[in-house]
Image (cartoon, rainbow, N blue to C red; front, side, top):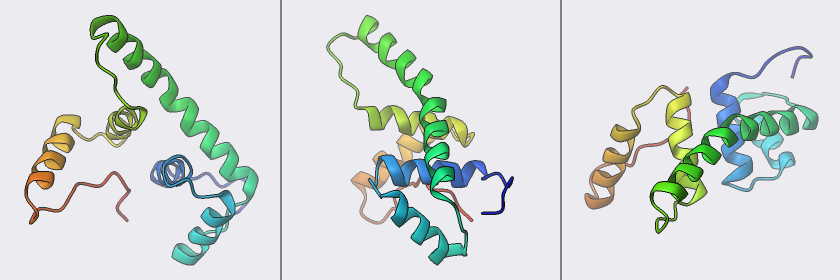
Length: 120
């Protein structure tokens, strides 16, 4: 990566997913980025990006979790569901539409499941 160059929002979201949900080590992320787009990113940049992504979604996750505990004490929402909600918001996508598409695709083998990965 060129010093001073900033990563785009979609690439940051993808790296956050790769680290937190695919559990891909930073070295593998570097290798993948080079293989896919000849993008060279240092380890420090990957760590800083992941920390920014976590800090960005943490307040929303805590707020929603707190609200659920107060209003629906018997409901337990997994953290990955809350992350889907936050990712839809960051991509300016309708959360309802995303879940509706996911539910329809789950019940119909001919429909493709929606993806939160950025499109290039």
